[in-house]
Length: 270
Figure 1 (cartoon, rainbow, N blue to C red):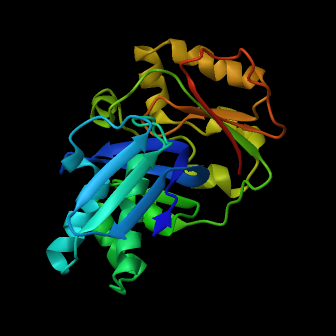
Figure 2: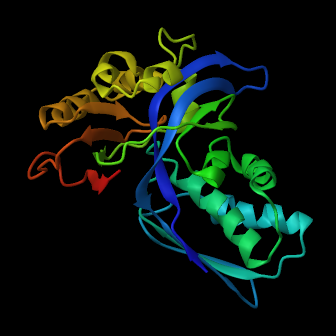
């Protein structure tokens, strides 16, 4: 069985307050994009996890794909499987690739072994993997609140636009990003800004609270953002708490010589 876990972007990200459990309450719009990993799961005589593509750092036992299998195996008598993950979505970029891989693993195991779990139950398992994971169970444009686990589908469509993802050779850990955030209520809630779908207002109103913090640490990212605007982007923002920026275009831009060779660049249709 093969699936294609996709990335997401954040249309606005407000860090509203620190919670008593150490997490933060946020408000954001998660929007799925067609940058995808490849995930294959098959029955096997023994459990195995293999990977290819972009480098995945860290202990393999901590990979969300492996954790997803183990979480379900605790409650269901799952036989061993072989899992192969081909990584196209860069790590620590704010694109949610790891969360998507974990959520898709749950969905695939649910189908492969006919567990007949509905989305609300699978979402509960996904939350055990991470705050962003429940979104990828539903995988539609959604307003995300709470610590990331509250998912409310919205009628919002960027079909017809072109998106460019640019990630420099900079990796940002989510815990480190949160350490420097000053929470607070936004002037304009994300849901209000997106309600009229007027992209002309986004540059001044639709903000990612992490962006200023990360640019202070890595000032070269400010030039990256400015360059995407000079190339004709209608809106540019950092996504999540990572170092990747996206630009939304009406017409395909030219990237020849625009960014260093060690930058990750991806262009796709929304």
